[in-house]
Amino acid sequence: MNWKKKIISMISLASFATLIIHIMNKLIYFSATMDNLLSSASGSYYNWKFGKIYYKKIGSGHPLLLIHNLDTYSSGHEWNKVLKDLSKTNTVYRIDLLGCGRSDKPNITYTNYLYVQLINDFIKQVIGEETDILATGDSGAFAIAACHNDNSVIRKIILVNPPDIKELSNIPDKRSKIFMNLLQLPIVGTFIYNLFTGRNSTDELFTEYYFYNSNLLEHDLISTYYETAHMDANSKYLFASIYGHYTTVNLKHCLKTITNSIYFIVGDDKMNKTENIDIYRNIMPSIEVETIHETRQLPQLEKPNEFMDKVKIFLEDEF
Image (tube, rainbow, N blue to C red; front, side, top):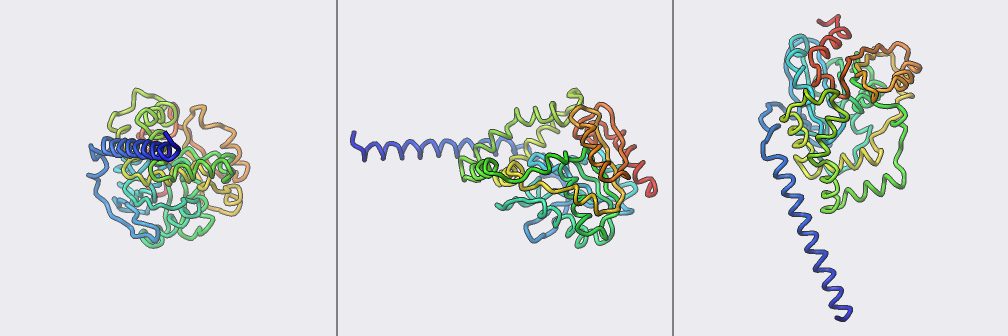
């Protein structure tokens, strides 16, 4: 076989392998979304400059903006078990962040400032008045940064398991940029994303990170998160930006400049280290902290009644 035949054989083999990977990607997305667990939810869309933002408005009273954890698995579904109770005393706005859930997922680099702009713009253009914020995990950093950017539109902030300040100091480096570029490849990158966000990975996410008691897990809950991560192949761009460290933000600087009331609701699991809370309180001693025992990252889903009790303590002037 001469060199020309070898090259043709290699190209043919590569093309066939690419086709197989493409078919596998299609099957993964089809199987993950065939139950349409998110499609039945009613809501509206805010036509933001970077894409349509899905949100649901419910209830009456002082406005409260719910922001889910920043992850391609996550969406406003995170608040389903407390949404009705919150709406009894507040006008609740539950959004899906850009790149998540039912919102658009443009092929862009997702940054901390992008989400800061989204929060400020949504409050000004949709809510239209000073708002309280209830945010989970890494999204809490955006809430604080948004308050630092314009505290005239934000009153109180409740953070559920606030992000690790040390991890937020990570910035894009050579290694993270290589991984990000790999994920952004058309077919291979999508396949890598699907490997990282497979059904087994979703199960592990809940049993090892999201929930303390795996006996409380519901099959539909895990399936909804798995579906959310695979509603659109473009979900990989947010995933790439997160692991490329483009969504981090310097919270120490922000915390030193704001005077708003900030409240933490945390799990007592070892994953929520006391050291992290101490760093926050050393910068801003006025931060109040309440613990929900035997919970991890999502106490609003694991122990919704206790979660509501803690929220009421912080918003007691509104209830």
